[in-house]
Image 1: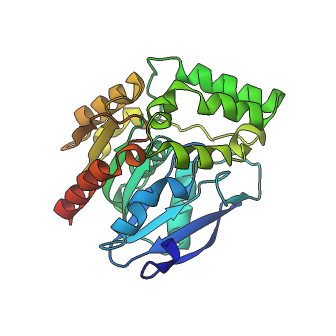
Image 2: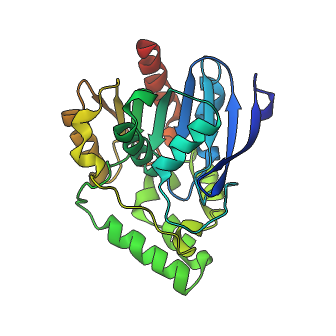
Length: 272
């Protein structure tokens, strides 16, 4: 059980008009796990205990997700929330791992706060400001419109049926946990009216400013957008290495946790 892990504790951090739920286990160098859109801390179940053997591993629910409670509908920034979260927990520097939206969050955070990252592992994500090559932004827009017009039940059905999740839904390892998490998503980020702050310069224009050791991971079966994003990060972040996980899609850490865990533990041990 998670609560039996050495050093385990959970709580809430007051950050920028939100109470962000978090869990911590292990000891040593901090390592923060950031989840994707409509997901929460549970998506890291296959990594949390393993990483706690060698790191002080922290996972948290982003604003509007999981157990986190927004207390304001003012414009917000997930990357600024990450900075406030680290400040609240007195974490000066950390290894940063993020998938999809979480990957975009940690990339935005690093370009704004370069001294506070030890290493970067963006997974199945695109840097903010990158032009998409498929119609996924339009599909997500239709799902958000459905949430506001017809309700979250209809929106979640569309979202769970989107081709983005098809490899994970067809994978016996990931389908159960993924469905449970996504179907419990509150939809606050879609229906509250709170807007995400625009960046002055998107991270896609600032990748060459990232200087920490970087491992870019993408599932072989993920959408083309995320392969393009991974290629851009490998090409523009000095020393970045891209690895493709065979047979995995967008939720690569949940679809093939063994391959994912081997990649990140080997990379992190090299950085350490």
